[in-house]
Length: 113
Image: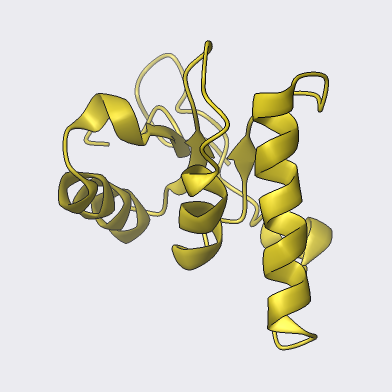
């Protein structure tokens, strides 16, 4: 964050420690203009908690892979259930959710355009 060399964090809840620590890191990232991508580890189970967390934290992105295995399908199915529960209250922003970011700093360390 201090160097400004990224624009997003990959959140793997089971690698951070506690849920509170996860939410704290996501808040820290957001305060510095970073987005968060909710993810899981390979070899994951059918637990769909990351789908709930992605929606609850409004992170806008989830990385779970193609729906080719039951563990991945479970997460996509949970997202569909959540969409049904929200019944039009929430809106998918599409490309509008992807705020433009400044380009990377130049070789001399000055901010990019």
